[in-house]
Amino acid sequence: MRGRATAGTEGGPAPVTGADGTFAAIDARKPSATAKPGPSPWWLLGIAVVAAAVIYSRRPDAFTNPQFYAEDGAQWFSDAYNMGPWQALFVSYQGHFLLQPRLVALIATPFGIASAPLVYNICGLLFQIAPVLFVMSPRFRAVLPSLWWRGAICAVYLLMPSTELNVDVASAQFHLAILATLVIIAPPPSGWAWKAFDIGTVALCALTGAFVYILLPVALLWWWLRRQRSTGVLCVVLLVGLGAQLYSTTLAPRTESSLGASVQQLILIVCDRVILAGLFAEEGQTHVYVTNLPHDTFIAAGICLLSLPVVVYAALRAPWELRIFGLTAAGIAAAGLAFPLVTSTGEQWKVILQGNDAERYFLMAQVAWVVTLLWAVSRLPRPWLRGGGWALVTAAFVSGLVAAWSYPAYPNDHWPQEARTILDAQPGTHLSLPIPPWAPWAVDVTVK
Image 1 (cartoon, rainbow, N blue to C red):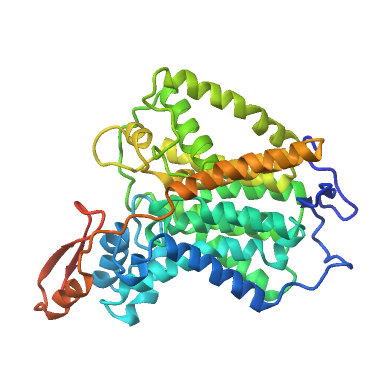
Image 2: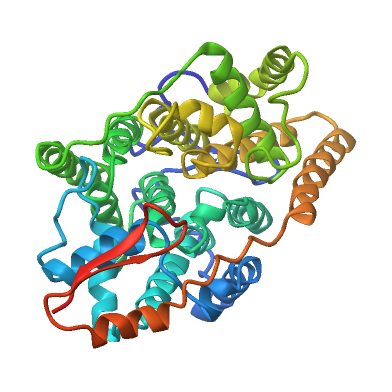
């Protein structure tokens, strides 16, 4: 399919269904007369339990010994304690309103100081599994009819490793951005509950970080293709969010930093942090990477060129839902490279290239790359070629999971004792309690 989607009988994109039932661009103005009943709530609950168990198994200490991580304690908890959780909701941070984590701080307040990290991590877990539940719900079946394909895509997302994106609320906004993208490309909601869910999800994402700058043009493009009223409503919601975020930049400007950008580093970052890290299911600079090898730029450029035909073919031929997802992922990765915050000293791109920092910027791009690769393999003309291609991609992906399944536990900061310190201190006492990943991160409170 090239250019603008051909209008269907009711104004939506013309149906595009793969021979294997992978993707289908649908006219969602009306529910299908032949639609099968949706899965029972018990089915989705079972999926939620399995997804939660997978996340738990990679770092159990997030729940057995929960601790604050980075902004979870230094900003969201500290601001909610010092200002009050309601007053802190719309405090600008680094040039953005961040409503999602501040709502978590509000939710955690009644559970007490000692339990706050556990509540934060549970909320982070729920945001992390939300895209899985949405894709496996009846809403997404019209986009992706095959249950096996939906399961495979959810597995790619759920299993893609990222230490900094695992259950902590500080980076849960990136899972929310994935969910908001799925909401935008999903068929229009048929009931008030789904309508409220869609508007609430997109509004929350629009008021959390800089994602609105990417999601608004993406939603406008999707509205142009579909001409559906529900997409127009989401565009209006995003437009309001854009105004709010533009206002927030006047309240707390974003920290300026040195990029240290170059074409050579860009090639290496795309190769190591997206193509290889996605295919081999690993964080940057873990096992399979080319940076610091002899002729690393030449090798990385070759890998990028070999990957380019897959990307171009998908951009021209893939269903629009996959193209929109990939476009959003590319936008988030590009914005992360243009305005990164990974170090307070030194050059940002050098830090991104030499380790696994900034994984949050690349998670969606890694997922989009692997899903695009699987889709491209499904277009091969011979069954044995498709089977062989899928086997190779699966083997590469599983190799990374086998090599590094577990995440390292955080050093114990004995939060229950720190909480007791806050509770026992005299009113007016200022306390600074270090938290992972350590200096300069700390819970800073004035005891009430």
